[in-house]
Length: 327
Picture 1 (cartoon, rainbow, N blue to C red):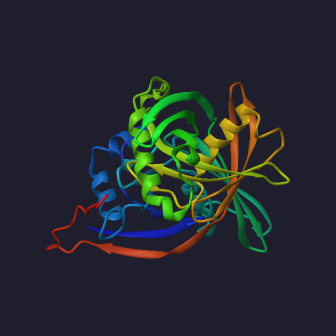
Picture 2: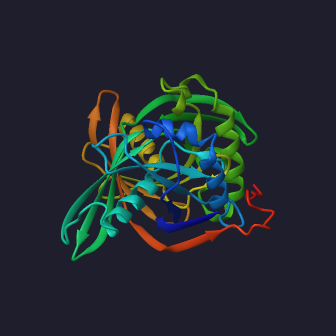
Picture 3: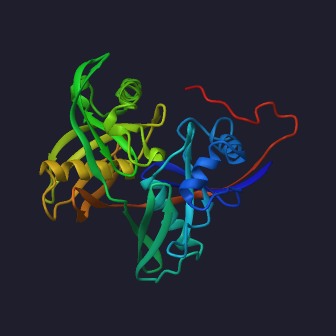
């Protein structure tokens, strides 16, 4: 087995890009289902888990688009499988596509990269100045509140949780409700309780969507309210997704879900911008770009950076071909 990857990070969160992985299906959503049970899953494990990756690695396999309306498709993956949406990955792919000329870009101005993902069609608008990428704006699928004020008993006490769709289903609540803050020293407790809440609500009726492939709680968002800036609300969050992975960035699809909820409660007013920080202090800016009935179309801006290229090989005698996880 031999694979070449190109690694990027968006606001600190890794994204490993892989081309040439065989997948089957008429759409990216179908390819995801097939990949979960086929050879692509073996490749995911090989490139994601230790010793070639780690428990918080993230990446994507480039696929054909659903039709000519998109530039390409992608299957997002992490240590536990294939996800339906990934905002930080979409930002990285926008910068990657422009860097490699997959999508033409001006030296000054904007290039629009259109990508088919399992949850729908998204865009990365890549901002350019003097031949350099200076910002990437991720335009997500319509996002909406699914349920509010769900009572839940946790090991840290009784809380109420909101469920919101931002390309995937997220449970969200203040970290203070669990006696925590979104800081690095609280990471173990944030992971433990994030996992607990995700699995407690995974089968909740509000998390079961019309498309079963999108159903279930993908992650838990725990946030601190930091007040307001001159342009709108200011929050810090950590998203604990899959089964205990910690997003180092403010989380793209998670930020989209926060935009939907804050817009619904009136905390994010018309024309305002959410300043959304991560557990490591990196930042996304987000707003409502469009309203569609009870849903909003969020736009999230951030920056992605190339880390490097890697060549991964499997020694025929290596007993750890499938990789391993300690979490």
